Image 1 (tube, rainbow, N blue to C red):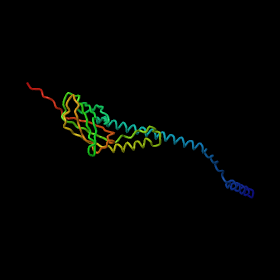
Image 2: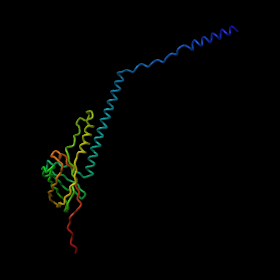
Image 3: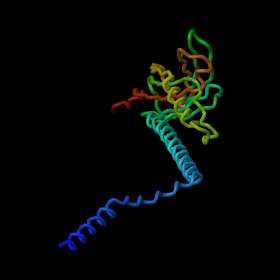
Length: 215
């Protein structure tokens, strides 16, 4: 019995001895290389910058296409008041020619003298013009890789579009066929600098024709 008790005591002592020994901690991973981390961050920054530039360019293209689509949809033409060169303007009843002959100050605005050529074979009794005018549009940045260059242009363009004036002009002047018809109207408020951008659209809805005699 004493031998058995001794063995039991010895086994218990070994169990307590090994059970109380501290367990070994897992070895800590070596810290990552700082230079490699900096390189990874730099690459991510370059990728984000390239993506931002691409998105900004695409956004500016969408804005430009939208503006041009609106002009085509409204059959709008750009008029340079500093030159007498004519433009072809498309209307709901056919094509006309339009040219600015003269601009002079008038009250708080500008009086414009236009020639409207009617190449059609009929006389149009009156017409309507829709004018939109203002200062010159912001120029797209040549160096669009500069930080926020495109974003600044987009903001300036949005403000410019909001600053434009517009006016509906209705005239009872007959647009006779085969000649230049002189038309005058006033845009106000307007300074000479605020005619750097002038867009016109035109509609006609009354045609004058001779009736054939009934036999």
